[in-house]
Amino acid sequence: MSQSHIELRHLRLLQAVAESGGLTAAAERLHLTQSAVSHQLKALEDSLGLPLVERAARPPSLTAAGRRLLTLARTALPQVNAALRDLAKLKDGDAGELRIAVECHTCYDWLMPAMDSYRDVWPGVELDLLGGFQADPVGLLLDQQADLVITSETAPRAGVTYAPLFGFEMLALLPPGHPLASKKWLAPADFADHTLITYPVPEDRLDLIRRVLAPAGVKPPRREAQLTVAILQLVASRRGLAALPAWAVAQYLERGYIVARPIGKHGLWAELYAAVRETDAARAFVADFIDTVKRDSFARLPGIRADLAAAQGI
Image (cartoon, rainbow, N blue to C red; front, side):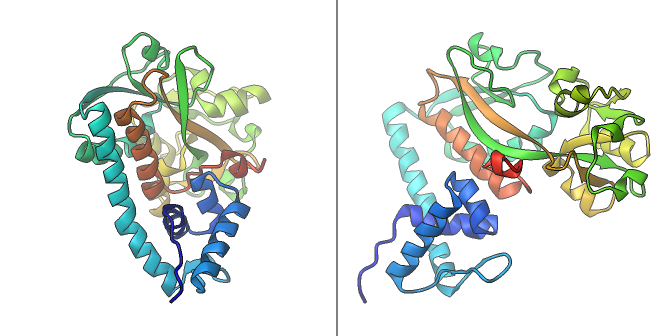
């Protein structure tokens, strides 16, 4: 047979298509345009003389040839990543410390599994989660009290750099049978006559209030709860409405415990970043932690996006 060249980017492309469910989502995950993904895929198919994706299927699915390359990708890519990681350890050492501050309560749902994955390959790096509410989590980096911060803040700070992790949608949560559940999406006025159940954080740290309700002049009463399950129980008991990330409530929606609606016509989307000191950004164990978080998150969390502008309909 004629020689065809399969590159690592081709394997990453096939894996992204298979795991994200389509070309558009794969493009977002790879931080490419959809046209670039389509062009790469078509060029590879032409080189091999075989179709790799059934484009007519909804969602698109891999052909037998595509599945064979997916098997190769799932074998080869981890080995390549492991080899690159080992080379980085030889260059920079395999020990270190990461003190991690987390801005959002629900982030622990996906951060803990990512930390477990990271420990498997960086056993010499000590991981420490900083507990409690932090008024200025990014400031902890400059005060040398934290080494990495999971945050939605991107305000420029001298000596700090931000690596995008993923975009996610905040959903309005209602009890089953609530009159607002008949609406396709909720407007600011829909919250006016309901108690808003939130975590005990300042209003300027809550996207729903800061970006939606306050600009519309809507100020519902608040009730605070420390735990996600407590917020969901209060919503289910008709004590008020809430807004949480889609990943945090997926299992409760599947069970019919609560119902959810988008906030605004295009939804209320936010983005999370890993903030680190500029002097640490190139350190192998720091960069690999960020890569591990992103990789694990896209494998585990429903509804997250790499291209936030596309998610918002921009």
